Every structure is written in structure tokens, then in C-alpha cells.
Image (cartoon, rainbow, N blue to C red; front, side, top):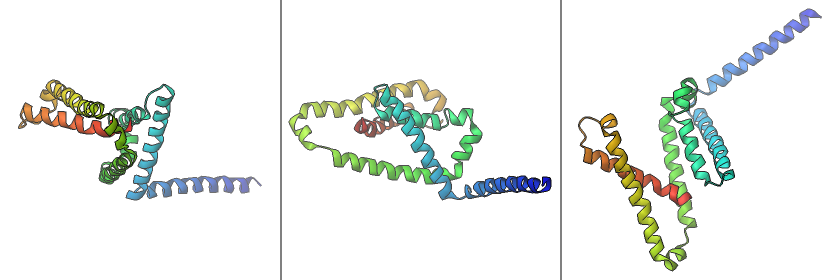
Length: 181
């Protein structure tokens, strides 16, 4: 009877190790890694979005915070092994393609939900809001470039080019966030 229980426990251990081995082998496939990344991103973004909704903020703020948490600033800095497992360098190309497809679909949905009657009824407010959503992020980007130019700009890039790049990047990326809010 003792011998039978030993065989069962060894069989369970080998089954578990076989399961872990096959699981780790499956994560070598690009599609499996991409699906794991998408699941992790959606779960973390939804969780932080839910928390932001509860404290009276737009859920997009929580989704931005989730991106910062999952990115190199937090998980990459404090848990590099987990970050390299979840976001290996070889998979970032696939994730980049998916993010571009997601952005295209997102902007399509924003366009579908856009009510042009609101713009016709209040053209002055629409112009002021649209210009402010471009000018303020651009100005803040140029101001940020002033402080980070020495540390982060390549040697052959002038300050004007660097400041324009940072300013334009900030104003362009603000558009989808503003549309979401």
C-alpha cells in the first residue's frame, strides 16, 4: 500500500513538471506570447480604469497609469525577469503592430460616435477646445525638451529640432486621449 502511494505521488509530480515544461515550451511561440501580452494589458488596464472610475476620474487615466506600471518604468525596473518574460524584445514588433491596429480601430470608433451637430451648434467652443488640445501639450512638450535636452538628445540633433519633435509628439498623442475623455 505504501508503494502504491509513492507511485501516485511521483506520478503527480511528473505530471506537474510535464505541464510546466509544456507550458514554458508553448510560450516560445510568438502568438502565445502576443495573446499573453494582450490578456495582461487588458486586465491591468481594466483594473486601473475601474479604480479611477471609483475615485471620479476618467478610466483613460487609469489605463495610462497601467501602461506606465507595465512598462520599463515600474515592472521593467523592479521586476526585470518578469518584464523580459512578458515583453521579450523579440515580441515587441508584433505588439507594436497590434497597437497600431488598435489605434486605427479606436479612431474609427471615435469617428463613428462623433456628432457633428454639436460642432455646428457651438462652433466657437469646438475651435477653442481643439486648438487648446494642440497648443497646450505642444507648449508643455517644448518646455519639457528644454529640461531634458542635455541628457536625452542625440549629439547631432539641434535643440530646435528636438523641441519641435517633443512638442509635436505630445500634441499628437493628446488627441486620442482627449477623444476618449
